[in-house]
Each structure stands twice: as structure tokens, then as C-alpha cells.
Amino acid sequence: MNDKELITAAFNAMEKAYAPYSGYKVGAALLCKNGKVFTGCNIENASYTPTVCAERTAFFKAVSEGEREFEKIAVVGGKDGCVTDTFMPCGVCRQVMTEFCETDFAVLVAKSTDEYRCFTLEQLLPHGFSNKYMKD
Ligand code: THU
Image: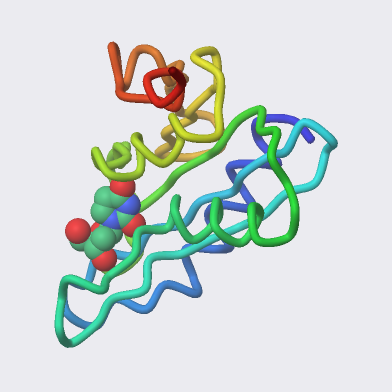
């Protein structure tokens, strides 16, 4: 799957967002190294803190289906689903990416299928805490 297709999948996932409190709809599409794609949207909650981001929805769907190797993720979002700018992954999502991905994991943040930026996970979370510190 190419970048444009992955970004399109993220836009489609954004349509499913459940965001009655913030109004910000976010979609993500996660490409596994085996070519499979898992999508996710943000899912908010009246109690606020149980809210989960689109990126983590995609990761948890994939991991719970047995996937462990990931190549890239596309992320789009905006107020009422209107994407006017890039939407950067939050710190918690960056930490979840760090659990499962190499430092060269690619994060595409898109305004459209033509206008997007690509960051490595290393750029988004330098010196992050990872499982390498959990080994004796
Ligand atoms: N959100 C995401 O889905 N991904 C992020 O990386 C940042 C924030 C969601 C959470 C919440 O539903 C809304 O955007 C506003 O913060």
C-alpha cells in the first residue's frame, strides 16, 4: 500500500470517530510489515479520561489480532472532521508506538493525500523510554 492509499484509509477511519465532547475527529491507518492495514478512530467518553486516540485504537486492534511488526501510520484529524492542518500524535500515542516500533517507524501526518509530512518515531519521541530499559 502506498502513502496516498494509507492516508485515504485514515480519512475513511476519521468518519467513524466518536467525538461528541471535543468535536475533533481523528483517523489513523496503521500499515503492518506484512502488508495488512488496521484503522482506528478516536473514541471519547463522558468521563473524559477513558478517551482513546485514533492511533492507539489502530495499534490495539492490530496487536490484539496478533500483529507485532509495523512499518508506518497515517494520521488525519480536525474539528468536525474538517482537516485544515496536520494533526500530530499525542505523547501517549508516541509512547505506545515506541513499545512496538523501531526508531525508523514512519508517521505520516496529512492535510490531504497530496500534502503530508513524514516523521520517524525517533524524531517524534527522541530518547523515549522503551523495553530496552526493562531488561537486566
Ligand atoms: N486525539 C487523537 O485521536 N489522537 C491524538 O494523537 C491526539 C488527540 C483525539 C483525542 C480527543 O478525542 C480529541 O482528539 C481531542 O483531543
